[in-house]
Length: 104
Image (cartoon, rainbow, N blue to C red; front, side):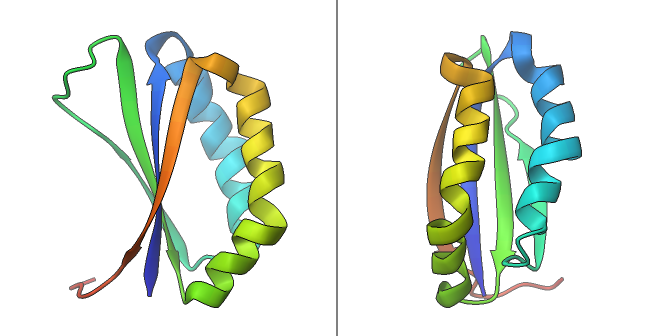
């Protein structure tokens, strides 16, 4: 299993709208691709960027084949929707991690 991690830094003035849009639109759209098993949203506490909020989205994916398919077929349009909506009010970077062990 792999974790597709997206870390998003956003301006505080869009935080409420962003959270609502993520819950109502973006996450359902990502999960509707059927490429991911589950997701987790977290907020970073106690960071040095007081004018920003930092969130991570972690999507659990079965294997690299599913992740590549997501990145090739679905991610460009979904990322464009996010960028178009929030423009210069946020920045994101993505990482992929191998899930080595869990007690869940």
